[in-house]
Image 1: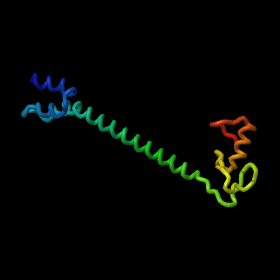
Image 2: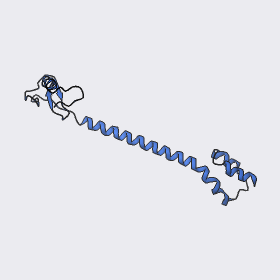
Image 3: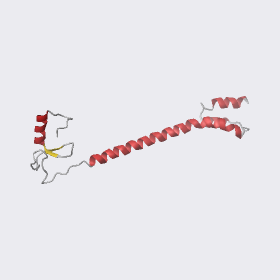
Image 4: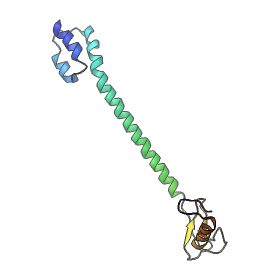
Length: 126
């Protein structure tokens, strides 16, 4: 009847539990799909959106962990026999710099290379 057609028109904009509560007791099973499909579209869409958001967050976390692992792998070990890649002299207790290529360089040689090349912060010198 008229109540059923009103329920069909408004079902997409009402919360599903209210629509289901308003179903008449004599509602025929064959007419329910036209009512239930629009009802379920919103919750299914919200659930998919949440799954996408959750997967993007997991992907971001994996990317951050990968970058962290990569950064940890770039460590440099300085020993008694470590030498400057520019001068060839032992580093010893002198301050040192690690170049972007991962080479050890005495701080003094690095500063001289900066002056020679006119390099500054953010520029690759060696």
